[in-house]
Image 1 (cartoon, one colour):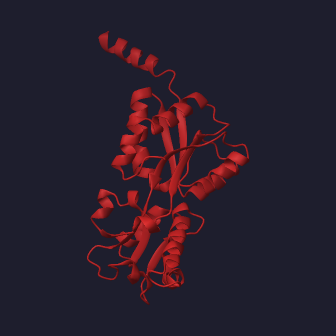
Image 2 (cartoon, helix red, strand yellow; image 1 turned 180 degrees about the vertical axis):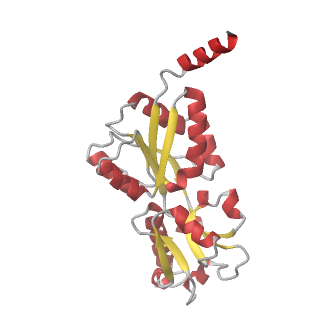
Image 3 (cartoon, rainbow, N blue to C red; image 1 turned 90 degrees about the horizontal axis):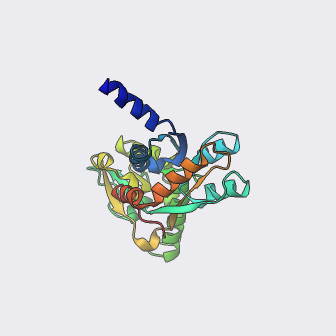
Length: 251
């Protein structure tokens, strides 16, 4: 009898639980998976995630895909949805930085200058991918500084052998030894990835600003719960988890 009452109480407690669908940038995979577990445990909701390049998720949403929340790795893939009326507005919740990675044990890249070495196999994200756009802006910054010559960006891009649809695919190429170097977010150098790659730091003056916005889709059938998820991400617990996974707080 006691067990039956306990099960009934649990069922009643979860009766108002909402199934939330969150579209989120690939770089958020680890952090948002943990955030989702914490949010669901606290609220009783059932949150599922679709992780992909922000540009892919934006396209899916404009073509009618249903979601409650969208978290993008930049404003360029988020703001058009606001302009189209699919999202009311967005709030920044995190920042990121870029880093160069190379296979652990490889001596091909020790400094940024080595990225221009003829024959080097470089992998980047496609230009439309937020990390791909940020990478090219970083290369332009380095070239403009004159530190490695004004044609630095052009010489680096001559070594480009593959362009990937999201940052996790970029990191995978290096971890598998299929590339000599790549540019990813600092947050993508997870404990697991760190076992197979080495990081070459990108000085702050060359790192372009990378800010992540999040917002609730206007068509969400669970708008109240979706807003609660956004508040959780931007609140103390969500921010603690984001810091744990290498993200910086929003400005």
